[in-house]
Amino acid sequence: NAQMRYEWSREVCAVLRNVFKLPGFRHNQLEAINATLAGKDVFVLMPTGGGKSLCYQLPALVYGGKTKGTTIVISPLISLMQDQVEHLLEKGIKAAMVSSRGDAGERRNTFQQLKSGDLSLLYVSPEMLTTNSQLRNVISSLYHRDCLARIVIDEAHCVSSWGHDFRPDYKQLGQFKKDYPNVPLMALTATANERVRLDVGFNLNITGCALFTQSFNRPNLYYEVRDKQRDVLAEIKELMKVKYPGKSGIIYCHSKNSCEETATKLNRLGLKVTYYHAGMDPEERLQVQIGWQEGRYQAICATVAFGMGIDKADVRFVVHYTLPRNLEGYYQETGRAGRDGLPSECILYYAYRDATSIMTMIDRDKDIDYDTKEKQRTFLKQVLQYCENQTDCRRHQVLQYFNEKFDSKDCHNQCDNCRIATVCEFETRDITGITKNIIRTILAIQDDNVTMLHCMDVFRGAKTAKIQGAGHNSVPGYAAGKDVERTDMERIFHHLVAQSILKESAIVNKSGYASSYLRAGSRAVGLLSGNEKLTLTFLKNGAAKKSKPLPK
Ligand code: ADP
Ligand code: ZN
Figure 1 (cartoon, rainbow, N blue to C red):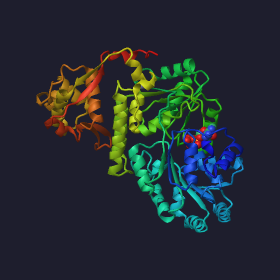
Figure 2 (cartoon, protein in one colour):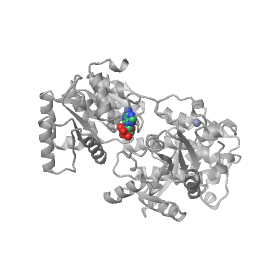
Figure 3 (cartoon, rainbow, N blue to C red):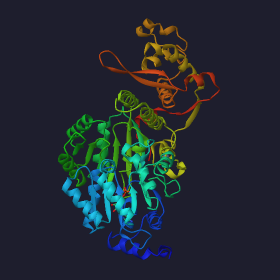
Figure 4 (tube, protein in one colour):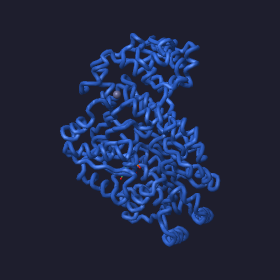
Protein backbone atom coordinates (compact mmCIF):
# COMPACT_ATOMS: atom_id res chain seq x y z
CA ASN A 1 0.00 0.00 0.00
CA ALA A 2 1.56 3.24 -1.21
CA GLN A 3 -0.05 5.15 1.64
CA MET A 4 1.85 3.07 4.21
CA ARG A 5 5.36 3.73 3.00
CA TYR A 6 6.59 5.84 5.86
CA GLU A 7 7.05 5.19 9.54
CA TRP A 8 4.50 7.96 10.21
CA SER A 9 1.92 6.79 7.65
CA ARG A 10 -0.28 4.98 10.14
CA GLU A 11 -0.38 8.03 12.39
CA VAL A 12 -1.18 10.32 9.44
CA CYS A 13 -4.18 8.22 8.46
CA ALA A 14 -5.39 8.02 12.04
CA VAL A 15 -5.23 11.80 12.50
CA LEU A 16 -7.05 12.34 9.20
CA ARG A 17 -9.88 10.10 10.27
CA ASN A 18 -10.11 10.73 13.99
CA VAL A 19 -9.25 14.40 14.32
CA PHE A 20 -10.20 15.93 10.97
CA LYS A 21 -12.92 13.36 10.31
CA LEU A 22 -12.17 13.23 6.61
CA PRO A 23 -12.48 10.11 4.46
CA GLY A 24 -9.37 10.64 2.34
CA PHE A 25 -6.88 13.04 0.85
CA ARG A 26 -7.32 15.39 -2.01
CA HIS A 27 -4.84 15.83 -4.80
CA ASN A 28 -1.30 16.48 -3.48
CA GLN A 29 -2.27 16.74 0.18
CA LEU A 30 -0.67 13.47 1.24
CA GLU A 31 2.38 14.10 -0.93
CA ALA A 32 2.96 17.50 0.66
CA ILE A 33 2.40 16.08 4.16
CA ASN A 34 4.88 13.28 3.61
CA ALA A 35 7.49 15.65 2.25
CA THR A 36 7.28 18.02 5.19
CA LEU A 37 7.27 15.16 7.68
CA ALA A 38 10.42 13.89 5.99
CA GLY A 39 12.00 17.26 6.81
CA LYS A 40 11.95 18.79 3.34
CA ASP A 41 11.11 22.37 2.44
CA VAL A 42 7.85 22.34 0.52
CA PHE A 43 6.03 24.69 -1.83
CA VAL A 44 2.34 23.96 -2.31
CA LEU A 45 0.36 25.56 -5.12
CA MET A 46 -3.31 24.78 -4.93
CA PRO A 47 -6.33 26.61 -6.23
CA THR A 48 -8.62 28.23 -3.66
CA GLY A 49 -10.66 25.58 -1.95
CA GLY A 50 -8.12 22.90 -2.82
CA GLY A 51 -7.41 22.17 0.83
CA LYS A 52 -4.16 23.89 1.66
CA SER A 53 -4.71 24.15 5.41
CA LEU A 54 -4.73 20.41 5.92
CA CYS A 55 -1.22 20.21 4.42
CA TYR A 56 0.23 21.85 7.52
CA GLN A 57 -2.47 21.36 10.16
CA LEU A 58 -2.29 17.59 9.93
CA PRO A 59 1.49 17.21 10.19
CA ALA A 60 1.41 19.55 13.19
CA LEU A 61 -0.27 16.67 15.04
CA VAL A 62 2.04 13.91 13.86
CA TYR A 63 5.09 13.18 15.93
CA GLY A 64 6.36 10.08 14.24
CA GLY A 65 8.11 12.13 11.57
CA LYS A 66 11.48 13.77 11.80
CA THR A 67 9.95 16.75 13.55
CA LYS A 68 8.30 17.47 16.84
CA GLY A 69 7.12 20.52 18.71
CA THR A 70 5.16 23.56 17.60
CA THR A 71 4.27 24.61 14.07
CA ILE A 72 4.44 28.37 13.48
CA VAL A 73 2.03 29.62 10.82
CA ILE A 74 2.47 33.07 9.30
CA SER A 75 -0.71 34.38 7.77
CA PRO A 76 -1.59 37.88 6.57
CA LEU A 77 -5.23 38.14 7.56
CA ILE A 78 -6.21 38.36 11.20
CA SER A 79 -9.83 37.37 10.54
CA LEU A 80 -8.66 34.26 8.70
CA MET A 81 -6.31 33.28 11.49
CA GLN A 82 -9.06 33.72 14.03
CA ASP A 83 -11.36 31.48 12.00
CA GLN A 84 -8.74 28.80 11.68
CA VAL A 85 -7.82 28.86 15.35
CA GLU A 86 -11.48 28.53 16.31
CA HIS A 87 -11.95 25.57 13.98
CA LEU A 88 -8.86 23.90 15.39
CA LEU A 89 -9.92 24.44 19.00
CA GLU A 90 -13.31 22.91 18.15
CA LYS A 91 -11.48 19.82 16.99
CA GLY A 92 -9.59 19.71 20.27
CA ILE A 93 -6.32 20.85 18.70
CA LYS A 94 -4.16 23.18 20.77
CA ALA A 95 -3.82 26.32 18.73
CA ALA A 96 -3.46 30.03 19.39
CA MET A 97 -2.66 33.25 17.62
CA VAL A 98 -0.59 36.34 18.24
CA SER A 99 -1.64 39.47 16.43
CA SER A 100 -1.94 43.18 17.00
CA ARG A 101 -5.51 42.56 18.07
CA GLY A 102 -4.84 40.69 21.33
CA ASP A 103 -4.02 42.55 24.55
CA ALA A 104 -0.81 42.18 26.57
CA GLY A 105 -2.35 39.75 29.07
CA GLU A 106 -3.57 37.39 26.36
CA ARG A 107 -0.22 37.56 24.68
CA ARG A 108 1.65 36.72 27.87
CA ASN A 109 -0.64 33.76 28.33
CA THR A 110 0.00 32.54 24.80
CA PHE A 111 3.77 32.90 25.21
CA GLN A 112 3.54 30.89 28.41
CA GLN A 113 1.70 28.09 26.63
CA LEU A 114 4.19 28.24 23.82
CA LYS A 115 7.22 28.00 26.16
CA SER A 116 5.83 25.03 27.99
CA GLY A 117 5.34 23.23 24.68
CA ASP A 118 1.59 23.25 25.03
CA LEU A 119 0.73 24.41 21.53
CA SER A 120 0.60 22.38 18.35
CA LEU A 121 0.05 25.41 16.15
CA LEU A 122 0.73 29.08 16.67
CA TYR A 123 -0.59 31.59 14.11
CA VAL A 124 1.24 34.88 13.88
CA SER A 125 0.86 37.91 11.67
CA PRO A 126 4.00 39.03 9.84
CA GLU A 127 3.98 42.47 11.45
CA MET A 128 4.07 40.83 14.90
CA LEU A 129 7.30 39.14 13.92
CA THR A 130 8.74 42.51 12.94
CA THR A 131 7.60 44.44 15.95
CA ASN A 132 7.54 41.98 18.82
CA SER A 133 10.99 40.91 19.95
CA GLN A 134 9.56 38.77 22.72
CA LEU A 135 7.81 36.64 20.12
CA ARG A 136 11.05 36.24 18.20
CA ASN A 137 12.81 35.24 21.40
CA VAL A 138 10.26 32.60 22.27
CA ILE A 139 10.51 31.11 18.78
CA SER A 140 14.26 31.10 19.07
CA SER A 141 14.15 29.35 22.42
CA LEU A 142 11.81 26.72 20.97
CA TYR A 143 14.36 26.15 18.26
CA HIS A 144 17.22 25.74 20.72
CA ARG A 145 15.20 23.20 22.66
CA ASP A 146 14.51 21.36 19.42
CA CYS A 147 10.79 22.10 19.70
CA LEU A 148 10.23 24.13 16.55
CA ALA A 149 8.49 21.63 14.29
CA ARG A 150 8.11 23.68 11.15
CA ILE A 151 7.48 27.14 9.76
CA VAL A 152 4.48 27.63 7.51
CA ILE A 153 4.01 30.64 5.27
CA ASP A 154 0.46 30.93 4.07
CA GLU A 155 -0.43 33.19 1.11
CA ALA A 156 3.24 33.00 0.22
CA HIS A 157 2.80 35.10 -2.94
CA CYS A 158 2.79 38.10 -0.58
CA VAL A 159 6.57 37.66 -0.40
CA SER A 160 6.97 38.60 -4.03
CA SER A 161 6.77 42.12 -5.32
CA TRP A 162 5.78 40.49 -8.61
CA GLY A 163 2.62 39.16 -7.03
CA HIS A 164 -0.63 41.06 -6.92
CA ASP A 165 -0.61 41.37 -3.17
CA PHE A 166 2.92 42.18 -2.08
CA ARG A 167 3.31 42.90 1.63
CA PRO A 168 6.56 44.47 2.81
CA ASP A 169 6.36 42.66 6.18
CA TYR A 170 6.69 39.38 4.30
CA LYS A 171 10.15 40.24 2.98
CA GLN A 172 11.86 39.46 6.29
CA LEU A 173 10.50 35.91 6.33
CA GLY A 174 13.55 34.87 4.35
CA GLN A 175 15.42 35.15 7.63
CA PHE A 176 13.80 31.96 8.97
CA LYS A 177 15.76 29.66 6.72
CA LYS A 178 18.98 31.46 7.65
CA ASP A 179 18.33 31.34 11.39
CA TYR A 180 16.84 27.84 11.48
CA PRO A 181 18.28 25.97 8.53
CA ASN A 182 17.14 22.57 9.79
CA VAL A 183 13.54 23.49 10.40
CA PRO A 184 11.39 22.52 7.43
CA LEU A 185 9.56 25.38 5.81
CA MET A 186 6.27 25.12 3.98
CA ALA A 187 5.04 27.86 1.67
CA LEU A 188 1.49 27.79 0.30
CA THR A 189 -0.40 29.87 -2.21
CA ALA A 190 -3.38 29.73 -4.56
CA THR A 191 -2.12 32.26 -7.02
CA ALA A 192 1.40 32.16 -8.26
CA ASN A 193 2.58 32.32 -11.79
CA GLU A 194 6.02 30.99 -12.50
CA ARG A 195 7.76 34.31 -12.05
CA VAL A 196 6.12 34.82 -8.65
CA ARG A 197 6.91 31.23 -7.68
CA LEU A 198 10.60 31.61 -8.45
CA ASP A 199 10.66 34.90 -6.62
CA VAL A 200 8.99 33.38 -3.55
CA GLY A 201 11.40 30.44 -3.49
CA PHE A 202 14.32 32.79 -3.78
CA ASN A 203 13.12 35.25 -1.14
CA LEU A 204 12.37 32.50 1.35
CA ASN A 205 15.68 30.76 0.64
CA ILE A 206 14.04 27.49 -0.30
CA THR A 207 15.03 27.31 -3.96
CA GLY A 208 15.67 23.56 -3.75
CA CYS A 209 12.30 22.77 -2.19
CA ALA A 210 9.85 20.07 -3.18
CA LEU A 211 7.15 21.59 -5.35
CA PHE A 212 3.57 20.39 -5.43
CA THR A 213 1.50 21.97 -8.10
CA GLN A 214 -1.57 21.06 -10.08
CA SER A 215 -3.71 22.28 -12.88
CA PHE A 216 -5.43 25.56 -12.13
CA ASN A 217 -8.21 24.75 -14.53
CA ARG A 218 -11.66 24.82 -12.97
CA PRO A 219 -13.72 22.75 -15.42
CA ASN A 220 -17.11 23.56 -13.87
CA LEU A 221 -16.79 27.33 -14.32
CA TYR A 222 -18.14 29.06 -17.40
CA TYR A 223 -16.29 32.29 -18.33
CA GLU A 224 -17.69 35.15 -20.34
CA VAL A 225 -16.77 38.77 -21.05
CA ARG A 226 -19.73 40.98 -21.96
CA ASP A 227 -19.98 44.46 -23.32
CA LYS A 228 -20.96 46.79 -20.47
CA GLN A 229 -23.18 48.73 -22.85
CA ARG A 230 -25.74 45.98 -22.54
CA ASP A 231 -28.48 46.33 -19.93
CA VAL A 232 -26.39 44.93 -17.10
CA LEU A 233 -28.96 45.19 -14.34
CA ALA A 234 -31.63 43.47 -16.41
CA GLU A 235 -29.17 40.71 -17.24
CA ILE A 236 -28.25 40.24 -13.58
CA LYS A 237 -31.95 40.06 -12.77
CA GLU A 238 -32.43 37.38 -15.41
CA LEU A 239 -29.44 35.48 -14.05
CA MET A 240 -30.80 35.57 -10.50
CA LYS A 241 -34.49 35.04 -11.18
CA VAL A 242 -34.52 32.73 -14.15
CA LYS A 243 -31.23 30.92 -14.29
CA TYR A 244 -30.32 30.60 -10.62
CA PRO A 245 -33.46 31.22 -8.57
CA GLY A 246 -32.70 30.83 -4.87
CA LYS A 247 -28.98 30.32 -5.58
CA SER A 248 -26.17 32.56 -4.33
CA GLY A 249 -23.79 34.87 -6.09
CA ILE A 250 -21.29 37.69 -5.73
CA ILE A 251 -21.28 40.93 -7.73
CA TYR A 252 -17.91 42.67 -7.59
CA CYS A 253 -18.05 46.45 -7.84
CA HIS A 254 -15.17 48.91 -7.93
CA SER A 255 -15.99 51.18 -4.99
CA LYS A 256 -17.98 51.48 -1.80
CA ASN A 257 -20.41 53.78 -3.54
CA SER A 258 -20.98 51.53 -6.48
CA CYS A 259 -21.56 48.56 -4.14
CA GLU A 260 -24.32 50.49 -2.40
CA GLU A 261 -25.78 51.92 -5.60
CA THR A 262 -25.83 48.62 -7.43
CA ALA A 263 -27.42 46.85 -4.47
CA THR A 264 -30.11 49.55 -4.26
CA LYS A 265 -30.88 49.33 -7.97
CA LEU A 266 -31.15 45.55 -7.80
CA ASN A 267 -33.41 45.85 -4.74
CA ARG A 268 -35.71 48.04 -6.82
CA LEU A 269 -35.89 45.23 -9.35
CA GLY A 270 -37.22 43.03 -6.57
CA LEU A 271 -34.00 41.14 -5.84
CA LYS A 272 -32.63 40.28 -2.41
CA VAL A 273 -29.24 41.86 -2.63
CA THR A 274 -27.07 43.63 -0.11
CA TYR A 275 -23.60 45.16 -0.05
CA TYR A 276 -20.30 44.65 1.72
CA HIS A 277 -17.25 46.91 1.79
CA ALA A 278 -14.41 48.16 3.94
CA GLY A 279 -16.29 51.30 4.96
CA MET A 280 -18.72 49.32 7.13
CA ASP A 281 -18.01 48.45 10.74
CA PRO A 282 -16.92 44.87 11.41
CA GLU A 283 -20.13 43.86 13.18
CA GLU A 284 -22.28 45.10 10.29
CA ARG A 285 -20.04 43.30 7.80
CA LEU A 286 -20.28 40.08 9.74
CA GLN A 287 -24.09 40.29 9.77
CA VAL A 288 -24.17 40.85 6.01
CA GLN A 289 -21.80 37.96 5.42
CA ILE A 290 -23.85 35.62 7.59
CA GLY A 291 -27.07 36.77 5.90
CA TRP A 292 -25.59 35.89 2.54
CA GLN A 293 -24.10 32.62 3.68
CA GLU A 294 -27.46 31.56 5.07
CA GLY A 295 -29.25 32.59 1.89
CA ARG A 296 -31.23 35.53 3.27
CA TYR A 297 -29.57 37.63 0.58
CA GLN A 298 -29.23 36.00 -2.79
CA ALA A 299 -26.32 38.12 -3.86
CA ILE A 300 -23.87 40.53 -2.36
CA CYS A 301 -22.39 43.58 -4.05
CA ALA A 302 -18.86 43.73 -2.76
CA THR A 303 -15.44 45.17 -3.29
CA VAL A 304 -12.65 42.68 -3.94
CA ALA A 305 -11.91 42.50 -0.21
CA PHE A 306 -14.93 40.22 0.08
CA GLY A 307 -14.54 36.51 -0.23
CA MET A 308 -11.14 35.76 1.25
CA GLY A 309 -11.54 32.97 3.69
CA ILE A 310 -15.25 32.60 3.13
CA ASP A 311 -16.17 28.99 2.94
CA LYS A 312 -19.33 28.85 0.84
CA ALA A 313 -19.26 26.00 -1.60
CA ASP A 314 -22.45 26.65 -3.59
CA VAL A 315 -21.82 30.08 -5.10
CA ARG A 316 -23.39 29.79 -8.56
CA PHE A 317 -22.36 33.06 -10.16
CA VAL A 318 -19.65 35.68 -9.84
CA VAL A 319 -20.29 38.89 -11.76
CA HIS A 320 -17.63 41.53 -12.26
CA TYR A 321 -19.43 44.81 -12.66
CA THR A 322 -16.01 46.41 -12.88
CA LEU A 323 -12.69 45.59 -14.41
CA PRO A 324 -10.40 43.52 -12.18
CA ARG A 325 -6.99 45.11 -11.65
CA ASN A 326 -5.05 41.98 -12.53
CA LEU A 327 -5.63 38.48 -13.84
CA GLU A 328 -4.44 36.82 -10.69
CA GLY A 329 -7.07 38.62 -8.67
CA TYR A 330 -9.65 37.84 -11.33
CA TYR A 331 -8.84 34.16 -11.17
CA GLN A 332 -9.11 34.20 -7.40
CA GLU A 333 -12.40 36.10 -7.39
CA THR A 334 -14.04 33.93 -10.03
CA GLY A 335 -12.63 30.92 -8.18
CA ARG A 336 -15.10 31.59 -5.38
CA ALA A 337 -17.81 30.24 -7.66
CA GLY A 338 -18.57 26.54 -7.81
CA ARG A 339 -16.32 25.18 -5.11
CA ASP A 340 -18.73 22.26 -4.83
CA GLY A 341 -17.83 21.29 -8.39
CA LEU A 342 -21.26 22.07 -9.85
CA PRO A 343 -21.69 24.26 -12.95
CA SER A 344 -21.33 27.95 -12.15
CA GLU A 345 -20.65 31.05 -14.17
CA CYS A 346 -18.31 34.00 -14.15
CA ILE A 347 -19.34 37.05 -16.14
CA LEU A 348 -17.20 40.12 -16.57
CA TYR A 349 -18.83 43.31 -17.83
CA TYR A 350 -16.20 45.20 -19.73
CA ALA A 351 -16.02 48.82 -20.77
CA TYR A 352 -12.75 50.31 -21.94
CA ARG A 353 -13.41 53.45 -19.90
CA ASP A 354 -13.08 51.40 -16.70
CA ALA A 355 -9.50 50.65 -17.70
CA THR A 356 -8.88 54.33 -18.26
CA SER A 357 -10.18 55.23 -14.83
CA ILE A 358 -8.09 52.54 -13.11
CA MET A 359 -5.05 53.77 -15.07
CA THR A 360 -5.77 57.28 -13.80
CA MET A 361 -6.05 56.01 -10.24
CA ILE A 362 -2.68 54.30 -10.55
CA ASP A 363 -1.08 57.44 -12.00
CA ARG A 364 -2.48 59.60 -9.22
CA ASP A 365 -1.81 57.25 -6.31
CA LYS A 366 0.62 59.05 -4.00
CA ASP A 367 1.27 56.04 -1.79
CA ILE A 368 3.08 53.86 -4.29
CA ASP A 369 6.44 54.27 -5.95
CA TYR A 370 7.25 54.27 -9.65
CA ASP A 371 8.13 50.56 -9.86
CA THR A 372 4.90 49.52 -8.22
CA LYS A 373 2.95 51.74 -10.58
CA GLU A 374 4.68 50.18 -13.57
CA LYS A 375 3.79 46.72 -12.30
CA GLN A 376 0.18 47.68 -11.73
CA ARG A 377 0.01 49.14 -15.23
CA THR A 378 1.44 45.94 -16.67
CA PHE A 379 -1.15 43.88 -14.76
CA LEU A 380 -3.96 46.11 -16.00
CA LYS A 381 -2.79 45.83 -19.60
CA GLN A 382 -2.97 42.05 -19.28
CA VAL A 383 -6.58 42.38 -18.14
CA LEU A 384 -7.26 44.70 -21.05
CA GLN A 385 -5.75 42.19 -23.42
CA TYR A 386 -7.95 39.48 -21.97
CA CYS A 387 -11.12 41.53 -22.33
CA GLU A 388 -10.33 42.76 -25.82
CA ASN A 389 -9.57 39.28 -27.03
CA GLN A 390 -12.68 37.97 -28.74
CA THR A 391 -11.33 34.79 -30.19
CA ASP A 392 -9.02 32.79 -27.90
CA CYS A 393 -10.39 30.41 -25.29
CA ARG A 394 -10.68 32.22 -21.94
CA ARG A 395 -9.32 29.24 -20.03
CA HIS A 396 -6.35 29.10 -22.36
CA GLN A 397 -5.68 32.77 -21.67
CA VAL A 398 -6.05 32.66 -17.90
CA LEU A 399 -4.05 29.47 -17.54
CA GLN A 400 -1.35 30.81 -19.82
CA TYR A 401 -0.95 33.57 -17.29
CA PHE A 402 -0.05 30.87 -14.76
CA ASN A 403 2.26 29.32 -17.32
CA GLU A 404 0.01 26.35 -17.70
CA LYS A 405 -0.50 24.89 -21.15
CA PHE A 406 -4.14 24.34 -21.89
CA ASP A 407 -5.63 22.96 -25.06
CA SER A 408 -8.81 24.87 -25.84
CA LYS A 409 -10.59 21.74 -26.98
CA ASP A 410 -10.60 20.72 -23.31
CA CYS A 411 -12.74 23.77 -22.59
CA HIS A 412 -15.77 21.98 -24.04
CA ASN A 413 -17.29 25.32 -25.04
CA GLN A 414 -17.38 26.49 -21.45
CA CYS A 415 -16.35 30.02 -22.36
CA ASP A 416 -17.80 32.70 -24.61
CA ASN A 417 -14.98 32.64 -27.14
CA CYS A 418 -15.16 28.88 -27.65
CA ARG A 419 -18.93 29.16 -28.09
CA ILE A 420 -18.73 32.01 -30.55
CA ALA A 421 -16.27 29.96 -32.57
CA THR A 422 -19.03 27.44 -33.21
CA VAL A 423 -21.12 30.00 -35.13
CA CYS A 424 -18.71 32.71 -36.30
CA GLU A 425 -15.67 32.74 -38.47
CA PHE A 426 -12.53 34.54 -37.46
CA GLU A 427 -10.14 36.45 -39.64
CA THR A 428 -6.66 37.56 -38.71
CA ARG A 429 -5.77 40.91 -40.21
CA ASP A 430 -2.42 42.52 -40.61
CA ILE A 431 -2.70 45.79 -38.72
CA THR A 432 0.91 46.92 -39.12
CA GLY A 433 0.12 49.64 -41.66
CA ILE A 434 -2.82 51.02 -39.71
CA THR A 435 -0.77 50.97 -36.54
CA LYS A 436 2.09 52.91 -38.12
CA ASN A 437 -0.36 55.56 -39.26
CA ILE A 438 -1.88 55.75 -35.78
CA ILE A 439 1.60 56.24 -34.32
CA ARG A 440 2.34 59.00 -36.84
CA THR A 441 -0.90 60.69 -35.89
CA ILE A 442 -0.31 60.57 -32.15
CA LEU A 443 3.31 61.69 -32.45
CA ALA A 444 2.09 64.71 -34.39
CA ILE A 445 -0.58 65.79 -31.94
CA GLN A 446 0.36 64.43 -28.51
CA ASP A 447 1.99 67.67 -27.37
CA ASP A 448 -1.43 69.30 -27.55
CA ASN A 449 -2.71 66.89 -24.84
CA VAL A 450 -5.36 65.00 -26.76
CA THR A 451 -7.73 62.28 -25.62
CA MET A 452 -8.02 58.89 -27.27
CA LEU A 453 -11.37 59.93 -28.69
CA HIS A 454 -9.87 63.01 -30.30
CA CYS A 455 -7.02 60.99 -31.76
CA MET A 456 -9.52 58.54 -33.26
CA ASP A 457 -11.39 61.48 -34.80
CA VAL A 458 -8.22 62.84 -36.35
CA PHE A 459 -7.30 59.42 -37.64
CA ARG A 460 -10.76 58.99 -39.17
CA GLY A 461 -10.50 62.40 -40.80
CA ALA A 462 -13.36 64.07 -38.96
CA LYS A 463 -13.91 67.74 -39.69
CA THR A 464 -14.88 69.02 -36.26
CA ALA A 465 -14.27 72.60 -35.20
CA LYS A 466 -11.92 71.34 -32.51
CA ILE A 467 -9.75 69.52 -35.04
CA GLN A 468 -9.70 72.41 -37.43
CA GLY A 469 -9.06 74.94 -34.66
CA ALA A 470 -6.03 72.98 -33.49
CA GLY A 471 -4.78 72.53 -37.03
CA HIS A 472 -4.95 68.74 -36.62
CA ASN A 473 -6.50 68.36 -40.07
CA SER A 474 -3.13 68.88 -41.68
CA VAL A 475 -0.95 66.56 -39.58
CA PRO A 476 0.57 63.28 -40.86
CA GLY A 477 -1.93 60.49 -40.36
CA TYR A 478 -5.00 62.72 -40.65
CA ALA A 479 -7.77 60.69 -42.32
CA ALA A 480 -5.43 57.74 -42.83
CA GLY A 481 -8.07 55.56 -41.15
CA LYS A 482 -11.09 56.83 -43.06
CA ASP A 483 -11.92 53.34 -44.31
CA VAL A 484 -11.62 51.57 -40.96
CA GLU A 485 -14.90 50.72 -39.27
CA ARG A 486 -15.56 52.53 -36.01
CA THR A 487 -15.82 49.41 -33.81
CA ASP A 488 -12.73 47.87 -35.41
CA MET A 489 -10.83 51.07 -34.86
CA GLU A 490 -11.75 51.15 -31.18
CA ARG A 491 -10.54 47.62 -30.79
CA ILE A 492 -7.27 48.44 -32.52
CA PHE A 493 -6.65 51.47 -30.29
CA HIS A 494 -7.41 49.45 -27.16
CA HIS A 495 -5.21 46.64 -28.36
CA LEU A 496 -2.36 49.09 -28.96
CA VAL A 497 -2.68 50.37 -25.37
CA ALA A 498 -2.51 46.80 -24.09
CA GLN A 499 0.60 46.33 -26.24
CA SER A 500 2.34 49.46 -24.88
CA ILE A 501 2.33 51.01 -28.36
CA LEU A 502 -0.04 53.69 -27.12
CA LYS A 503 -0.51 54.73 -23.56
CA GLU A 504 -2.90 56.86 -21.60
CA SER A 505 -1.59 59.06 -18.84
CA ALA A 506 -3.42 61.12 -16.32
CA ILE A 507 -2.76 64.83 -16.26
CA VAL A 508 -4.15 67.00 -13.51
CA ASN A 509 -5.06 70.51 -14.60
CA LYS A 510 -5.06 73.65 -12.45
CA SER A 511 -8.51 73.05 -11.03
CA GLY A 512 -7.47 69.60 -9.85
CA TYR A 513 -9.44 67.74 -12.50
CA ALA A 514 -7.65 64.73 -13.96
CA SER A 515 -7.97 63.83 -17.60
CA SER A 516 -6.47 61.01 -19.46
CA TYR A 517 -4.39 61.91 -22.47
CA LEU A 518 -3.12 59.66 -25.18
CA ARG A 519 0.59 59.36 -25.85
CA ALA A 520 2.88 57.18 -27.91
CA GLY A 521 3.85 54.20 -25.77
CA SER A 522 7.29 52.72 -25.14
CA ARG A 523 7.13 50.45 -28.21
CA ALA A 524 5.84 53.08 -30.63
CA VAL A 525 9.02 54.45 -32.15
CA GLY A 526 10.62 51.02 -32.51
CA LEU A 527 7.56 49.76 -34.30
CA LEU A 528 7.48 52.69 -36.68
CA SER A 529 11.03 52.16 -37.85
CA GLY A 530 11.25 48.37 -37.55
CA ASN A 531 9.98 45.39 -39.50
CA GLU A 532 7.81 43.91 -36.81
CA LYS A 533 4.42 42.66 -38.02
CA LEU A 534 1.28 43.17 -35.97
CA THR A 535 -1.88 41.14 -36.39
CA LEU A 536 -5.23 41.10 -34.68
CA THR A 537 -8.01 38.56 -34.98
CA PHE A 538 -11.53 39.76 -35.62
CA LEU A 539 -14.88 38.06 -35.72
CA LYS A 540 -16.21 38.05 -39.27
CA ASN A 541 -19.60 38.88 -37.89
CA GLY A 542 -18.60 41.30 -35.14
CA ALA A 543 -22.13 42.24 -34.18
CA ALA A 544 -23.17 38.72 -33.25
CA LYS A 545 -21.59 38.72 -29.85
CA LYS A 546 -22.72 42.12 -28.71
CA SER A 547 -26.44 41.77 -29.09
CA LYS A 548 -27.46 38.15 -29.03
CA PRO A 549 -27.09 35.57 -26.28
CA LEU A 550 -24.43 33.02 -27.05
CA PRO A 551 -25.29 29.57 -28.34
CA LYS A 552 -25.00 26.75 -25.84
P1 ADP B 1 -7.73 26.50 0.68
O1 ADP B 1 -6.98 27.07 1.86
O2 ADP B 1 -6.86 25.76 -0.27
O3 ADP B 1 -8.61 27.50 0.00
P2 ADP B 1 -9.08 25.00 2.70
O4 ADP B 1 -7.91 24.45 3.39
O5 ADP B 1 -9.80 26.14 3.35
O6 ADP B 1 -8.71 25.40 1.22
O7 ADP B 1 -10.10 23.83 2.41
C1 ADP B 1 -11.27 24.07 1.66
C2 ADP B 1 -12.37 23.13 2.09
O8 ADP B 1 -12.05 21.81 1.70
C3 ADP B 1 -12.58 23.10 3.59
O9 ADP B 1 -13.96 23.12 3.84
C4 ADP B 1 -11.97 21.79 4.01
O10 ADP B 1 -12.60 21.26 5.15
C5 ADP B 1 -12.20 20.93 2.80
N1 ADP B 1 -11.20 19.85 2.70
C6 ADP B 1 -9.86 19.98 2.77
N2 ADP B 1 -9.26 18.79 2.61
C7 ADP B 1 -10.24 17.88 2.41
C8 ADP B 1 -10.27 16.46 2.18
N3 ADP B 1 -9.15 15.76 2.10
N4 ADP B 1 -11.47 15.90 2.02
C9 ADP B 1 -12.61 16.60 2.09
N5 ADP B 1 -12.65 17.91 2.33
C10 ADP B 1 -11.49 18.56 2.48
ZN1 ZN C 1 -12.87 28.10 -24.02
